[in-house]
Image (cartoon, rainbow, N blue to C red; front, side, top):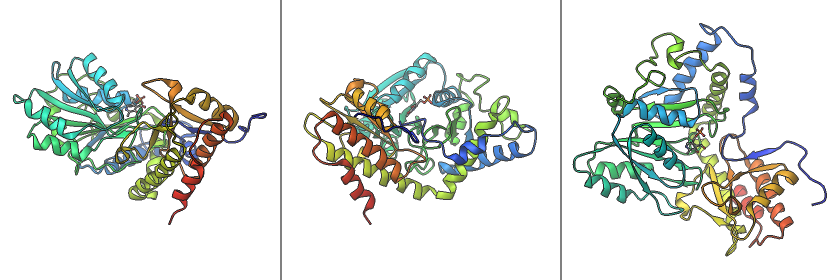
Length: 394
Ligand SMILES: Cc1ncc(COP(=O)(O)O)c(C=O)c1O
């Protein structure tokens, strides 16, 4: 391409941190308020009121200041004891990193890995738990959506497998890549601990995590010995002054941002929001399918029903994915996600989570297609036309 076409509003289409709505940015842009009463304590109450509804739980929510890793650590530290065995179900990259943290923090870890490009097979979980006759496994840990492979695990089916084995392990689910994008119902699905972070579907800058705990997790907390003061749920009571909820000064700007984002989510409605993500993801998938050629573009998630609605990971075969990402960024103004957990030159990711609409998705897909044309890369047919047909359908 002779001249770049990137001047104008850049689109960052990585799978988090995602696009922050102007309303959220504006809500954060303010001088520090009184931290003892007024607008800040109001927004804290509002956030703690809305968050349990976001995951449909009657349980409690805790909001550690930190990223997703902070949420992981808070979940482990409050429910488990040194030497406990955890069964970690990985379908890509992120559950395995959580497993590394668990091991570092003094837990014993057994990692169960899905077939490449596939979700965890619930019957294998059931089988493993049935063999744990002495109930050594204290918790089953997994992710809802793996952001590296864009594979979605079937959480109710894994719960059903745990139930079928009559195993008492806690069930902890990382929803960091799916919260606010994909259907998730903590209590109805029998999840004991849910973890999310602000920077993906929740449309808020990185820096806040959320950990929801149901009754079984709160009971386990009483005897957990990995507890430390900063993460401790007992210390973070909702009844005391504001600083107990955050173990110190509240993350003021983030709370105003998250409050506004949760208002926007409630205004749209969760069901409509899940439907929007599904439809936009179908548009992305139609494009990938149209581009797909033997030895060229293809999905990493091999089974259509396991493909996430918030992120799509694409293998590029003989097409140089690093060059493709460079062209889309420099010439088009679109930043695509790096392929992770494998060869960076052979895959890329499209984030379609949170504050995204049809023109953003079509713009990203159009920019990828134009870049593929510029590279002379093989394409079976137009992905943009395929996506438009899906997004324009009645
Ligand atoms: C599914 C999932 N879990 C955990 C994490 C870790 O979150 P953080 O990078 O905010 O610590 C990420 C980050 O991308 C993720 O996608």
